[in-house]
Image (cartoon, rainbow, N blue to C red; front, side, top):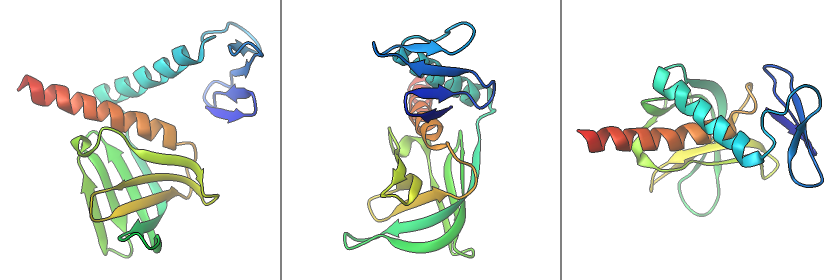
Length: 164
């Protein structure tokens, strides 16, 4: 989905919605499948969950990498590749010097943002010693889906662990 102002458009099917003055969605043509924003958001989450369950979810994108290792600043360290699957995150880069993995149970949620400090969309992973700020360089509009996938993976991995 791509949003602009009070409209939103699906890049797959081309369907467009507008946000009405009363706060509901209305299709510009055809049937309005989602008139209430929380219903649309629930559908998005369920779609991502289904991709995780059936094994079709995969994020694999080139990124610019910045690191925070202290509270002084964030350091630009180079290019890399961010992969997100049911196994969690895997970040590689910096001419082979960086190889970081993060399991789904490492965090309930994901710190990510759109046009972060006017630098670009950003996905942040890491631990108490280092944070990796990953800025997608090619594929856009992955931040929201990645956040949903990280949350759903946490829930799925917790359910699997509890059933064992």
